[in-house]
Length: 101
Image (cartoon, rainbow, N blue to C red; front, side):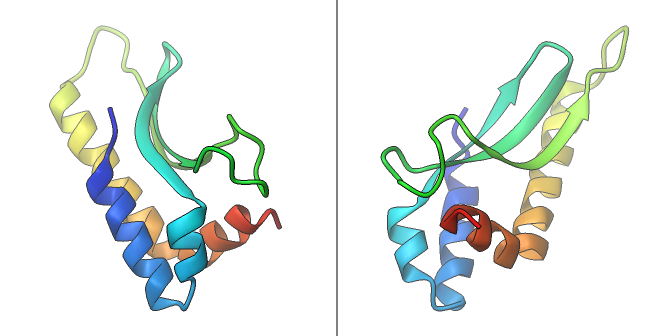
């Protein structure tokens, strides 16, 4: 599931740091991924971006599944809030990651 509102927020923060280039050319999708035991919110570089290998992701937030089930909507809301906080707290680190440093 794509989280385009988080992608827009990251792009806005990068532009605010004079990194329009990364906002336009490097930021790909932010989405949920699931490995069966943990759900993640990942930033993927834009397809064809040369400074990060395709399939590499920057983890913005994660949560392990609770045995016996959990309130998934609460989990999703929590993950989105954590991912948003991570974007704001780590925008400079994300920019360096996108640059391949």
